[in-house]
Image 1: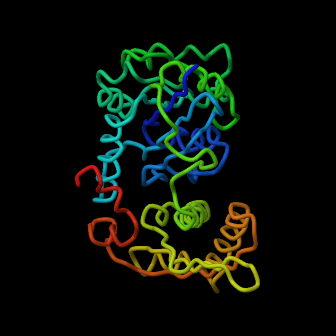
Image 2: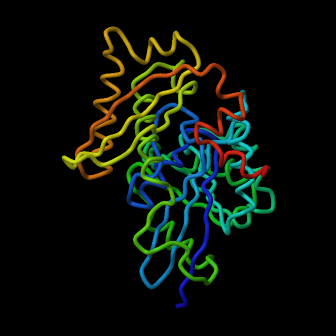
Length: 302
């Protein structure tokens, strides 16, 4: 068999498990995961190399939702744009519930590309076997999909079959990335995302979507520790007080959890300094978004 390579986009509404899926497909944590919706904000590429067979570049897209801010508008536009840029798509849906307006919107956006799309009913582990066909026909009626698979991204169920099903459809081609690469993100970018993941996990509903993280310093010290200085951005002073917490307890909690995650990722000791900065209305200001590292959210518009 000649070597194959191609790009495969993961699309769907928020919180259906796309980021969990790409992490398990790649075998490394390339996308942060949260129970809160709209965690993913940029396109994340994860590379799966099957020696002497194929290389698949999976592109995790932000969940498609009704935007309220410039940031969310741009990331939804970006997710829509990427549909026409990849060889195949995976339309990920939540098998525990009936299709909603968001699912119908994604299917409509796919249009004729549904024929180059696999419909993936995710979270199948949470659906009793006798009920697994309950919503199947409703999801399949949304488009003329190439195939339908039932998976559990969280429990790595059905993913090997997914790769086997994709392989025959990939175009022949050279490797797109070096064999030992599994993402195109920089180490500093992943570090910022791992810190943001803990902000999402450890703060209430108000904070996560109004927050961002950027890295100010990232270097190896003489004692071998990786030294990271990161800034958590929020929009209001009240949010800053929440992130810091009484006597600094909340930011300490975030720091401890983030350091543990970073050490696991880097495979070495980490010295982490966290700061909190207020930038009013940063989600609605293009220049602020560019400064905070969301430049690729504007790529589709040039």
